[in-house]
Image (tube, rainbow, N blue to C red; front, side, top):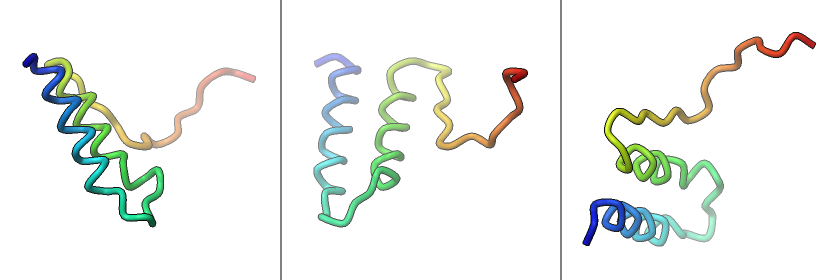
Length: 57
């Protein structure tokens, strides 16, 4: 089994464990962060980074 498939299976298992009936989007973010970071070395996922000025409008 590939590392990516193992990471995805871990993600699915974690999501199922978190399915408590009172979960919100925020409940699952740590599992998604772990999945994204496991797919490639050097990837750092940030959950709700602080706002920065951009655009110019």
